Image (cartoon, rainbow, N blue to C red; front, side):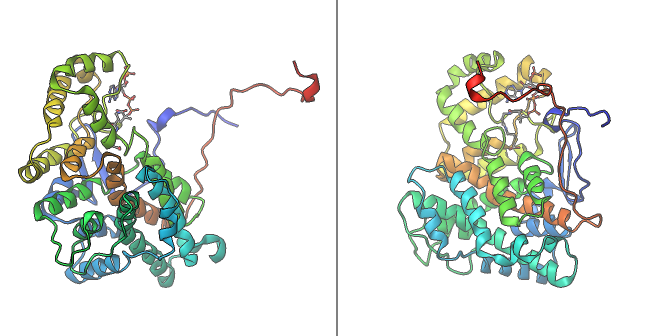
Length: 401
Ligand code: CMC
């Protein structure tokens, strides 16, 4: 049997070799395919960064144009998908809706179904198979913002709408979110760019919980839609993608900057969690949080400042000086971006969806890399250390105490 060691929470287990994203948590470095996140946030756009993450290099102009068109052409959904949305209660959490529709989406594309097509469908490396795989990728990236916007609109009893051609990826998303369907709609360029930057920052983060979940599911050679649905389910939790929603709920519950010291004492007594602080990998400032601060300044010039900022700033300043947090290397993470989403008018429970839409790209980049690995795919089947009862004899129900 051999000696097994439990690695609780996978603190020290590498599950895969990857070419995609590099993090140095001690120095606060994040790079996608070698490019610093700061340069991508400053100079790239979300779709270009997506191409880089998935295919490994920045695209040429013609590669970019083709990718852009493929994604935008795949942004519409089959009309029957609308029924799935309409089966939810008006107050359903949009992450429940999104998780379900991603799972349902796979049933519309039988060519992606491994049980119909043979178990090695996505591990084949011939041109036709890779093209089939990439078609599913265009669909997933194209439809992610559409499904997200549909989850938003259905709860308001509003019709689903299709954006006019010519809008950017984030511009089309903003149009579908709140627009009443005016063809002349133009998203505010500052807010559109801010959302695009936030999408770049959220596109990938190596073996986070949801990406690991996608690969775990993908390792059984399930279809990519089902795998992405599992990623959404994992992202929903408040320790991961749900933290951006939890940050705002926490700030609202604190109520005012004056209440911050008492709140921090509760955190230190482990009665409360300081959402938006701490990270498994970063033991210094998350490089994305600096970009978020700059982006927030730009957004607030358009939207005005939210009163919660004062509480957030006091929390930030006090926690960074407090021995409890200093000793444990707890710094703000990416989830204070919820303040930007709030200023832009997104409802609180929609924030994790704004994490999921761009993270589809990271999930799919890792999934594609694993599927096409030269070593083939090995099913992820960890072991355990059994600590339950020894063998015992079954007793019929009438004879039990
Ligand atoms: N508030 C108070 N104490 C904390 C926090 C926090 N936010 N985060 C960690 N700690 C303490 C923790 O109690 C532990 O203390 P001790 O050693 O005395 O038991 C120590 O710091 C180490 O933390 P950990 O829980 O062992 O660290 P982890 O790597 O298992 O968990 C984390 C990482 C992100 C789940 C955790 O820091 C956390 O719960 N943060 C709040 C939720 C949050 O903001 N999540 C978003 C993460 S970033 C974006 C994403 O990936 O989605």
